[in-house]
Length: 309
Image 1 (cartoon, rainbow, N blue to C red):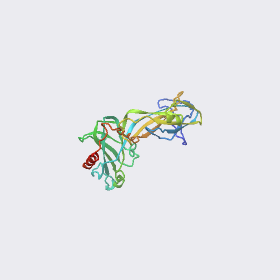
Image 2: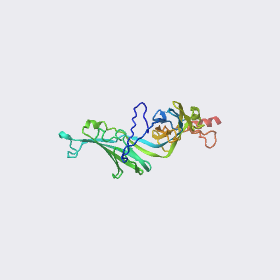
Image 3: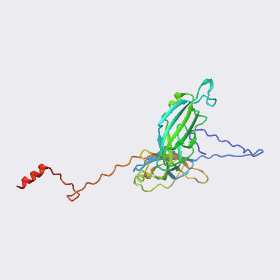
Image 4: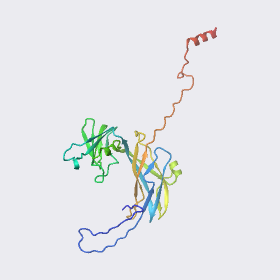
């Protein structure tokens, strides 16, 4: 099981519900594993530089192996419109003491350039919370260009498949105070899509090897309290990925040995850099047919005739 450092761990041994009678048992706990910093890890794309990570073996010993890849692209959108209004004063939406529930409807314009499958529409500020959320609800609907509702979701969005086209996403959030909903007028929506091909992440043992793209890191055994550093480099960006796009994925550090799960998975991300400037076109040289002819005027023609006389 994963263990958080600098916190108290409670281990409980209980009898299974279908086991009757008294039984005796013994329990032993062994700590092992690797820690990685920094986390999350931010990579550089299409760049000779690399990202350094530090790996430490906290207890016992472990075999260090590294494998990772960038698998998804994230696009961040602001709402094109935001409307706050009271809900109808029905028994369903009525609150104690004559108060009325308020709602905000946020609209987002989503353009899909090519058909995507297993895409996710999310709102990081709201997702993953239900009973502990200060808001009454969070529901969204996806409409196509013909105003047909083709997908819905809540605090735990499911993957959706979208064809090429223009879509409208409407998010409904409820609260009893309009002033609270005012703070959601610029709420960010994240549209996460899988990459056509995953971008491999390569590890190197030294900065020089990473800069020269030579002698990749394979494996190394770390003993208790031993640390090492690695340099990570990502492959090329897929064609057609606009600058500023955020690519995300994961990296696994460690190896399972003798039943001990020493693999640690960490979140990685990278921002697509601007495209390099285009190379300047070569100028034509020589006085052949491609060379530009000098422009003659009446004055230059007369001067040329006087020179002949």
